[in-house]
Length: 123
Image (cartoon, rainbow, N blue to C red; front, top):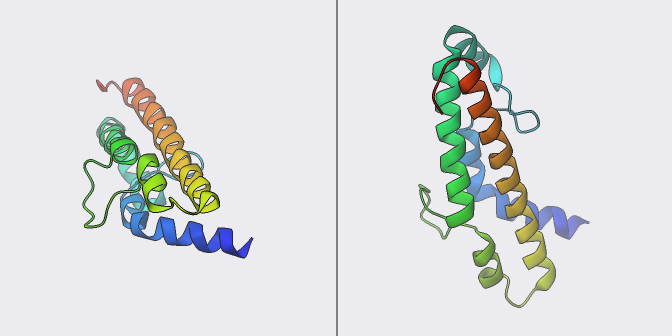
């Protein structure tokens, strides 16, 4: 269990700055923090257009590794296999983590597009 937590922390640390750019809560894809709640209330169309673009870029990053601002190799499923070639447990944990990120950004992207259209945007 401790090993799993350690590996998840090691895998996720390089991507925390990317996730920190998100204005959405991880669990609900709702606006995150008081500033974003106010931005969403003042200009919902603009807020959800921006979130839709953010989610699309994040999904592209997690699927292909493109669009990242990091110096290190992006963590995609194929890179999990390369990085953890000799450790099948670490490789599976890495793949599970990346799939979770892909699922999160896909779900939040769909939510952001729905909210964008509800507020009159074209997303």
